[in-house]
Image 1 (cartoon, one colour):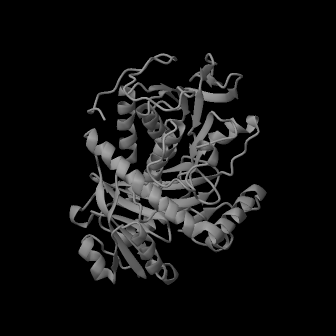
Image 2 (cartoon, rainbow, N blue to C red):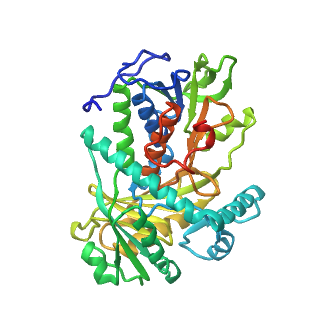
Image 3 (cartoon, rainbow, N blue to C red):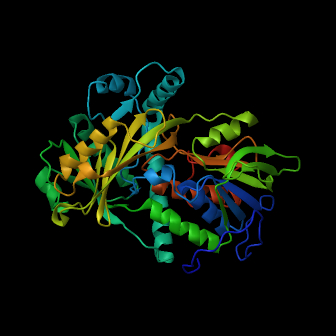
Length: 451
């Protein structure tokens, strides 16, 4: 890979010839448009450019990483990754109605489409959770390796912290520690079973919790970092490879054409229509927007919009601030040091989309932060925000081809999906280029992606 380069200026709506030092094996797909400038879209564009494609990214915001990616927890954590399936959400929803700091937020009332999705999620948990967790562990380990390679190769600025504490509040969850260790042993991922808070403080001296802990695992190779910073730097690298980024461009429709090409209708910042862009293929990496783009083509996606919540606070006491990342199993919340700040992120909200967190979400984030690091920061004065991401009932990413051979999809990672998104982007780019995947892609790519 080339050395780190600076940011190129924006270019007009056309494809310029990029260097052909990398030759793709796919002679049909040459010019690719990627819809979405978040983590999925930018990493896909980067790997496609490395595979020899000419790539343009269409993003409706003014910069990359301004929607779901802005709420990413920053975890690079194969050991803790798991499908976000919610088998007991109906029961949880009822019990949470009377809690000020619930682990899951659900809007009251009956919503048929949502509860159909929940029933599917429960079945997926019963039938495929263990298998899909293994698949995600494999994918996440691959993505973490790729991310670290990119960061090192291009000398990227990093705000990474090494090591992750996986804490279990409830005994039922702690009873799964042995099974988790067995699963990680298959992938040769190191882990330590920590007995009691003294053992926890051996790996994280800043841990000061009065909250009862039923169990704890420590993963020394897991990490956390600044996902938004990574995506912004990767944008510059992608541009140096010839990728064109077009911001404030909202895709209104995609239309397959005779001859195997795809026409894309685009509106600019002021709502005026631009000339349609015609390409050989399209990758949809725009979260829930993918559904509205595919619906006119007779394709539906099993996606549900889920809210995730975030807090960022300045470090107050360095000696009591975390040096390793913490993941709370009950709340699905991660606490990570990001330079001189502490990020608290996670939770799941089945609520209408909004940029402002629900009051109970703020209470839950504050509870988790103060339970473990009460003196590290003044969390009550933190900045809070929420993000929306698309989720399948099985909690797995949705990546690969569609019934239209030159329309592809890459979405469904959730708040903790940095490493899985990077791994999936590489798998998709290799499949589109006609290359064999570098890891076992069973269950990680839609069948039509490699056919």
